[in-house]
Length: 503
Image 1 (cartoon, one colour):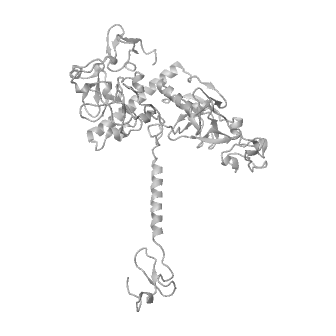
Image 2 (tube, helix red, strand yellow):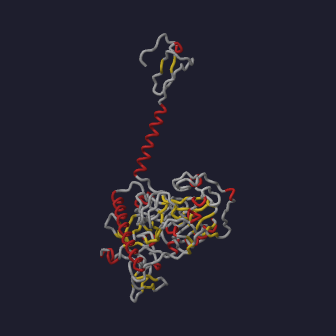
Image 3 (cartoon, one colour):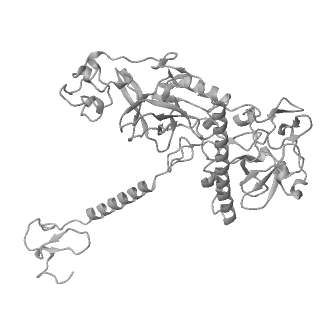
């Protein structure tokens, strides 16, 4: 939290401390004199008060499915044990957010449960800003007022009966339910609009703070090639095993992007001692580190990113994704450590079934490339000197100054889905979820479907046979008039004295 905003204020009963402002102070805190307060951790539910009963959702926060769930004892969160990839805990269990001390804040959008009503979107409101009759209602330390969207209603609630609203929740059937009435739909629309408004304010505030402090990217060790960790090994092929292309020295761009180099087509990098065009070979980008010039910059809402310094041609090699090469056991251990320490940035990319590249502690500029549901770059696995390497290549012509992105194809691990902030028209809303099809894709699929249907109808309508179905000879024949039937007969074979009239 930016320390310049204001002073620290401390809880008089425990070590909790916050900056004394709405952005940091947990909702439900009770300010006292002399820079002190009572924090929400000291909430005590009243016996017999239904709005003080702890409640959990009936679906998993990771996969959104029901079933046997592991429930947090501090908030409504619930998970499948398999989705968290953990053993069944003994005794009380709290989710990662609650263990990290995360609390609702003023101006947060939440899903709130009251009585028998469905989960309803609401905004946390400062007690001083609610109507006087609402403020006078009995409430305890840890309770805060929320204003329900789609209505003028308020209620005092606390952490165990609410959870954060996330982008895309308005379209989530698990929360919205079936047969939503007009009031609820209005509430969802208002919540989505208010959420976007608050997110824009937060992003602008963060950008201004970052620019004021002129922050640098988080520290990491720059490396030029992959570094092996543990038992992981790099494969090296014998020269006799490396494929030789058929390019000629006389070619205009031997082994280039637009050439017919068989190695390039198969994503094999030519070896300098094997390629027939020798030093003229243009298919040694990994070995020679022929990277496109890029620049690290601060994005508006997605941290640090990577942008082009010059125009990049479609198909061009942008950079190699390098870092520490680890095995699956080490990967799981690092992810577990990150979850336990509330680390949300991952730089892991699968190399093959046994190896993963982790560009977190060590890497190059490619580690700053952000995700997009509509990327302008893609990862390609190339074979270089017998081993697999990962390169980032341009999917389209990229002008100078444009941010470089690729699709992470993330496997969701941990407490829940990670919100996607790429801003693409087809954005799915979460990392690891398939992007929404564009309108052009939908039209294309519809045309294809209609074409296939027409084709199948044409295939059903067969032409008439030339020979009698009974005797197999040609000559004057009688056709069956049933639609789609190709059979023909001689009148004699049907024991008819003459050709029938009509059908």
